[in-house]
Image 1 (cartoon, rainbow, N blue to C red):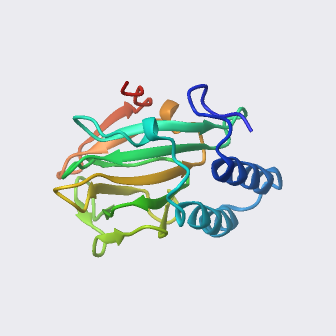
Image 2: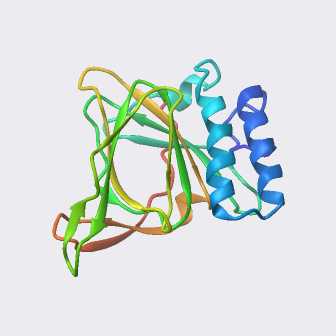
Image 3: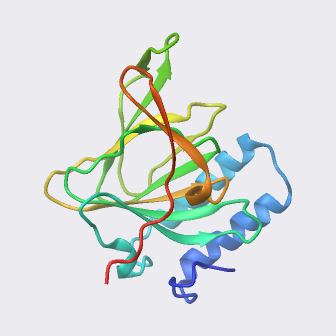
Length: 192
């Protein structure tokens, strides 16, 4: 397992997850299998809140996106998202498959869809994720959403897994009117 240089390599739960996901992807399964099987594996990881190193759980003045693992072949990345009280993302896409597993606290994910040119509308009700739950996104099943911490008085942490090194992928944020603005997220530096 190769983790980000700042991540301790002796994090057994994370290492087990990364090794299992690598083995799954070695078989080049269809996306549906990645989301189903990978989702169960991520659910097992986030059902335990005893493994995330403290530096990767620190909130900042805006939500933090810490790289935990980047596959050497670029097949996937594992990221801890740390949400300070009340923090939220803009409406955005991913362009690749993704799994979101709730580790600590809770968050809401509101899906969006285009209902015509320049017309972005909510797609169903917002989903509330609590520890142990996993949600999937992809261009095939729905890729545009906005996420926010469910709490105004405490930190929430989710573990995201993407089908690429997400910090290097050109994606987009969207205005309520459907306007698209490209961006590359990168990763948050550790707060020391």
